[in-house]
Length: 332
Ligand code: TYM
Image 1 (cartoon, rainbow, N blue to C red):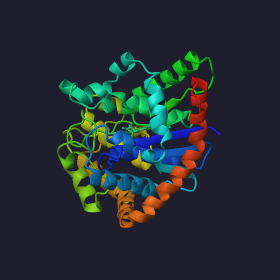
Image 2: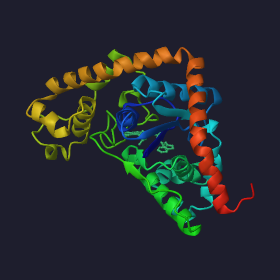
Image 3: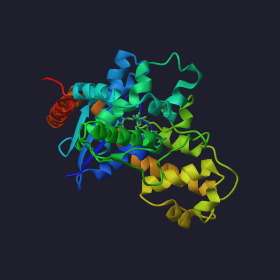
Image 4: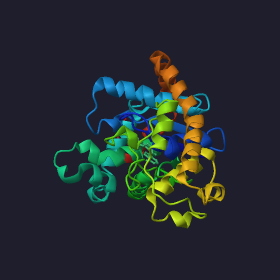
C-alpha cells in the first residue's frame, strides 16, 4: 500500500493554518487507500531555541490537536520523532548526500535566517535533510503539506534520486507534495499578504486551535477586510488578499470550493459574510478545542499513545535504515 507521511513541529501552539493546510487533510487521507504515518517533529522544533518544559508541553498539544481532529492512533501511526532514532541516523547520512548548493536555495531558510545567517543554528540550515529522512525512512510517496513546505518535499526527491544514482540502486522512491484545496496558504487575519503563523506578534492575527468559541468568533468579526461587496467569481478577489483569505477559509471549513462560496455570497457585504464565517468556524473548531483541553488534562495518556506509535514507526523504519547502511558499505 502506498504510504503517506507528514509532520508538524511542536514549536508553539497550532493555528488554523496548521489545521486547514495539514491536520484536516491528514484526517481526510486516513482510512482509505493509504497507510498514513504522522509525526510530531520535535527534533525539527529545536532548530530554534525551545525551553524544555515548553517543548514537552507543545509536543503534547500538537498530539492532542491530531487526536481531537480525528487522527485515530489505531488506523494511523502517530508518534514523536525523537523516539525513533532512525530519523537522526538517516538524517546524518542524507547530510552527506545533499549538497550545500541545494540548501542555499531553500527560501524558508533565507526567510528565517534573514540578515542573521551567521548566528542561526547549523540545524536550521540542515533541517530539510532531516525532513527528507523523515519521509524516506518510510518509503512514503505522498506528503500532504501546506504551500510553504513544497520546496522541502522537492528537495527530498532530489536527495532520493542522488542516493539512488550514487549507489546504483533503486531504493528510495520518488515522493510528491500533496498540496490541494482552497487553504494551502492561510493568511494572517490582519494582513492578507502575510502567512498566518504561530509566531506572529498579535494574537488577533491568527486563530489558535485552543481558542474558545467566543475568541474564534471575535477574531473573525474583527478581521481586516475592504469596503467592497463579495464578487461573483474568484477572479474578482485577485487584488483583495484579505477578502480572498476569508473566502478560502470558509471554503476549506465547509468542504466547498471558493467558487461555490461566491455562488452563495457574491453580491453580499461583510455584514452578512463575517457572521456566517464566524459561526461556521465556531461550529467546526470549538468542539476540537474542547477535546484538546480534555486530552491535555491527561498527559500520561498522550505519552502512552506516542510511545505505542513509536513502536509501530520503528518496525517500519529500522529495516529501511539497516538496508541503507548496507547499501552504503557500513560494517554492521
Ligand atoms: P510546520 O510545523 O511549520 O507546519 C505544519 C504543517 O502546517 C502547514 N502550515 C500551513 N498551511 C497553510 N497555511 C498556513 N498558514 C500554514 N502554516 C503551516 C505547513 O505547510 C505544514 O504542512 N518541516 C515541517 C514539518 C515536518 C514535515 C516532515 C512535513 C517535519 N518533517 C516530513 C512533511 C514531511 C514544518 O516545519 O511544518
